[in-house]
Image (cartoon, rainbow, N blue to C red; front, side, top):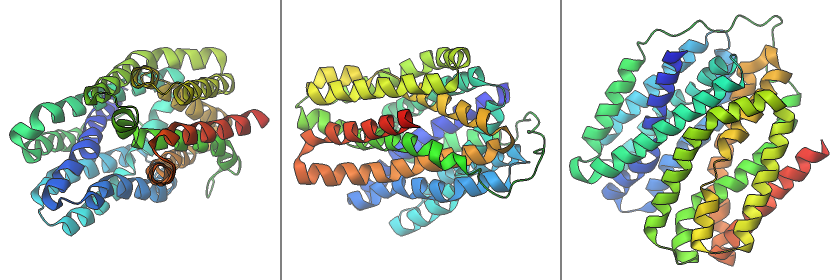
Length: 353
């Protein structure tokens, strides 16, 4: 199990570097935002398309999925900073991001077989990796450039592929050719909640500084705090889900999301928004949803994890597009209201089940 957590930490560090600082590198090359945003939506779209396929193909060989996904991160970090043509950059990004999409279905399924407390520890480690990747970029991106930074983390990811991993899940008792029919209906309300959250997150810095006239430093502080609190609270969330059960815990988390965005929408103050945004509900949401999937579909954990990752990726890809369209049409102050409507729709759908 420790090796899995080490890989989770390295992958999260690599993910933070790619999502936050690869767009900056590409913008320095092109001075065009349309290229920079591609660094987010291209991998998200490929994850949506390929994560369920990777889960289905590798359900009996989950450690192979983990190694393949980590190799994709290593390749992206090694190759992308050495490219100066933006089209070549995006082509290589698409190629290796296709491999990255295999990582989460394999890793979360392996860890999830040990229960919600193991998932809690996983999300704590993931938050620590996100924090390290963000801090490394903040400290060294302008001083040494993207190439040395990405090469160092890429080399670490490549070496981590060689770590010995625990045995995979046993083959399923009865074969399945695809996703259990109940998974999409279970994930549909969760998708609306995540879509709302990603829409708000995609414009969070702009909304806080331009819409609410808050200081730019407040964005970094709140993002650091929410990541740090997520690292601290995730193990407790795992114990909480195990004690009360995934259905009840997920219902409570959705209540929390509804109250959170209602306050953000009704009280448009930069410091209030930053404090509320720093409340770490997302790890609890993921732990409860995954545990619910694993309890209901124990013979199809890999496929359910693949569908869950596809749902998260689709919300990431669509959230920014939706938020941008709404902000352009109605102004930045409309951003939390759109999120609130989506979260309320997901909350209502879940409680009518």
